[in-house]
Image (tube, rainbow over all chains, first blue to last red; front, side, top):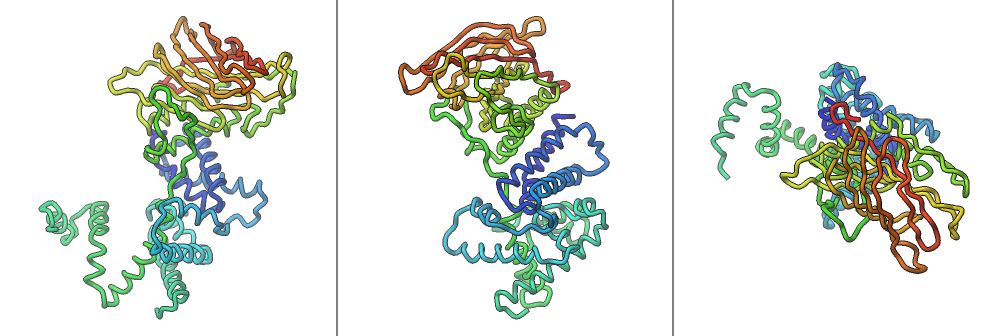
Length: 173
Length: 293
């Protein structure tokens, strides 16, 4: 049972790291938060009764660890963390590309900045599904809202972002 | 490229709404780009195209994986040591979890969060390996094996991790954890006092292991040749431990022997490096894989 749970936790690690990274905005700190979350998950494995999905349980642990870190480091605004250079450095780690990639990178950077400015409710649903990679069902369990509400919030976030990105690019909607 | 028969059958079921949801999603995902092209110019096509561009724009974030945190210390690997960079991200994930030994304060006085001030001449606090710490080591080892396959041995200090895969067909005997501690003898050393250095090793009963540990403030690379066996519930460890000394003179010191080890620390001997004497002690226990500690 423990070995199975260990394997499953390993499968979620990168997503836990992405959740941590977007909350704390630093690659080094996100690694530490993901590490702390793994410690807690492994040590608390006996308390995981399977009623919640593993993704939901691990997400909760990761968020709590990120909040603990932010609180200890006196970052008052727990829900909004600026995208610092590390987010872009993390992108650079993926692959170095030719000059044509520069435009893609700029679009990516612009999208991240605009996501941060979304209204609270749809920002959360959008981040969970589009950045963290949770399914609508998983996001529904995490947020404790219906799947339909997740879908409508993601849609609303998309509409806002597409409008703003078109505006930034000088295109007509 | 023409569609395969299998793909055509799937599309046929999709048209009837007869595919299970996960399969339907997969098929739709594969043909989505083509659908958008067909619909281009229509309002539906424009909407889908805009949504697709937005999703693609932030795809790099979804592809973010844990960056590597493991460094392989030796440029002359002994035994079968993986090059970390060739491994799948699963090993990086396990390596992060391997770092829990540091987060849990296991490496006392080193980079752990539990800071132990090093006072020259003061008796070093005995490491008591708690049940929780034994559980952590068991968890970490199990997790490394779950993502990296069966291991002959695992070695970690506060900043590096090494693993050695078991050979194909190699029978895997019971894992044995050994905690080594290197402590400078401050009464005889002529150099500045250095904090102790702790290494956590997991190896196999009756399987020899040759491990080169990374340099530290106390010494250059430390080489372990270990042969643990089980005897009456204790670990009988035959060992040779050698280390390169400072640059001041002859460079290698070694100690060898055989000890019965338990959870209490047992002295293994000393390494006479040029400007310092380093005491080595160890504790060991069997990892019970049924209960995972």
